[in-house]
Length: 124
Image 1 (cartoon, rainbow, N blue to C red):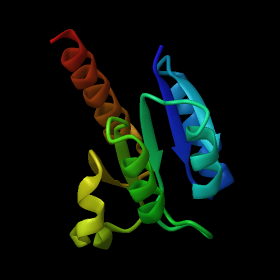
Image 2: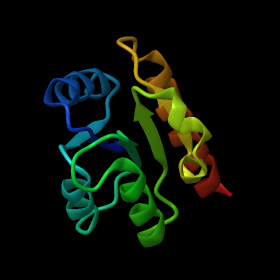
Image 3: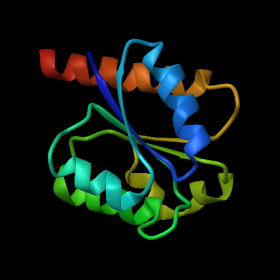
């Protein structure tokens, strides 16, 4: 079973993502900040990180950079309410960029694709 780390400072969104993504059969770990996510990553390795950009403290772009420095093999999906960050070169290190929506189909589909891609890479 795949483990998804969801990093978002909005508690209601974290709860929604936990419920919706757990329904897909994934184990969900929640972090309310970049600092909390990095602390969790120092102890474990999720299969995918779903990362908000705008957060207090260490924002999503800094968190992304630190994840990539620590382990480039961890897929990261930037999940933000702001489409404008897509033009920021710092977001290009992420595996995907999704603008938040109440419809989580795009997020779920992207996670499925990343997990399938990683599975195929391990089979090679």
